[in-house]
Amino acid sequence: MMTEEHADRVARLRTRMRESELDGLVVSAPSNVFYLSGFRGSSGALLITPEQAALVSDFRYRLQGREQAPAFEFVEVERHLYAGVGRAASQRGVRRLGYDAAHLSCEGADELSQAAPDLDLVAASSLVEHLRLVKSRCEVDWIRAAAALADRALAHIASLVRPGVREREIALEGEFLMRREGAEAAAFDVIVASGPRSALPHAETTARELQPGDLVVIDIGARVNGYCSDMTRTFAVKSTSPQAREVYDLVYRAQRAGAGALRGGIACGEVDAVARSIIEDAGYGEAFGHGLGHGVGIEVHEAPRLGRGEETELAPGHIVTIEPGVYLPELGGVRLEDLLAVGPDGAERLTGSAMEAEIPIIR
Image (cartoon, rainbow, N blue to C red; front, side, top):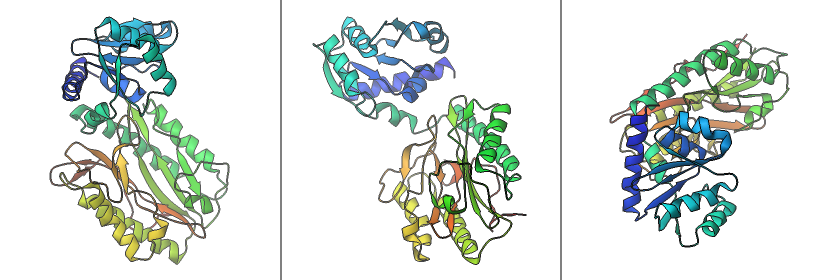
């Protein structure tokens, strides 16, 4: 990440701080710390004031902090991270200090107030998350690169889908290939859910052996330069039933309709409704119980959310998934997911893997 881009982000954050009448802000969520500074350590917080930016951490991250966040003053503490943040804020003349109540623990807030009792602590959630909504060209390129790694991994592990192979074997191969090809890590634990377990929307991969006739849902993503991708495909082993074909066709049409509705200015709930109505009209509405999609970036699930009644309007630069699903305990589940970059009049598909119009049957 270029230091210039971090500087621009901090400048935009300071504008939002002025609008909120804050003369200091504690940034505690690791994803937000990384977004603003480039620091990836497991223990650290940022203190942003109108004139200064500091990274507060301990001895373990002295060198890493200076290497990854060179534009930030490194403030070293021995213990009690947020007590150190409070002292640093007082030393810099901060009086009205914002903190993210969604991320800072009660213990951390207590440390702040005890170390600097004169501070006026103000809950100020989502200031950084709002900045993260619209991705820069570099961010889109990294997400696209992460999607390409997942594409290659899926092409490989789909060839392993056959009777007798364990879910965990397939998932491990996918993660190994992404890492070998250059991913920092999988964006999340690769999901391989087969047979009745494919009806679990966020199933955990197990040692279950694939059986003929199984539906197999594979959900996979890579992380590149701190940015994630996310994709899901559904397969059948050896054979499948007429109902499974019907459900797959339904989910396919819903996915395409949702992706086709994406554009700048449309409400997230409206996109959800376009896809959901197809599934509901076919009588499977109760089997589609989650939102249509979500934002993807530093975190694999971030704003905006595409769900019922969501009023947030999409804007060019938003990166979102479109992932309808139908989950039937007696049959299994079908989910199809692509990653897309929203533009003014449509969306660019970042997922490269083909999405078959008919359920792929692995012979």
